[in-house]
Length: 306
Ligand SMILES: [Zn+2]
Image 1 (cartoon, rainbow, N blue to C red):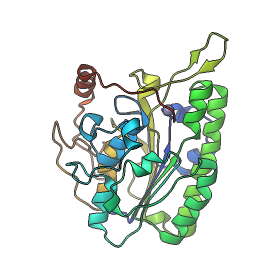
Image 2 (image 1 turned 90 degrees about the vertical axis):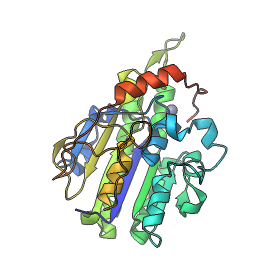
Image 3 (image 1 turned 135 degrees about the vertical axis):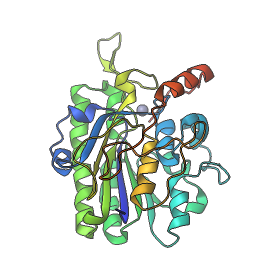
Image 4 (image 1 turned 45 degrees about the horizontal axis):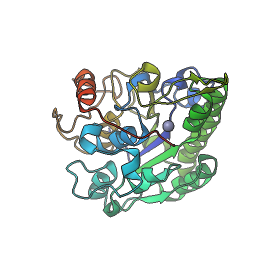
């Protein structure tokens, strides 16, 4: 059931809003795919914490990443929770691994230097063309493409508003181009192709009557996220419970690598139910415990600028 490639298109700040946005391309690509709009973001619902969980398979209490930290230093080589990049580099010393990210610290602060990641950071409207070229030329074993414009539209106009939803429609086109690139590379049948958001956001009114948005809290509009997957062993329909960090387990499993053992206080990424043919759990739901722990620890963060 192995795949030879995993491609993840990350739509920053899209939350569960992909469900109601006009996304004809994603509707087509994932028509027989597995989908959920009720996956959980990490807590707090902020980019570094959430993408960090996706790439390390552990909660923010374990990986320790936040927006300020990833702007300052690379992911530590001695972390007990190496990133997917480093795990995959060990398993595939000669294959291409790539991170093409709009938000630069998501490359520089969430990848180990030793992982040998091919990277590029440009605003997403400029990033997609070189990302597609890279896919076609290099057929990477793993590629994470991060788009930030939807989150920008959410901060500026409020999440769920017309302008925000219009930006999701634009991102739908970006996802389509990435998928077409997989086809042109001739790797479509061997690829697990996914779309994921890291968190959603709110819509709040300013004194002047205009709207803006923010995120970091635990409301459903902030913490519910989308995950869409397509691949030859992917079940058609609705995925069971999942958390963003589970994507680390999904990636390892898809590429035929062992998934570390589930351990409370350690690696907690699992394969969700109803995602792959022939894999139906068990799935341990620990979301309640994690929320309680995060509240007790009072994880503080600065207001986000991405
Ligand atoms: Zn944001």
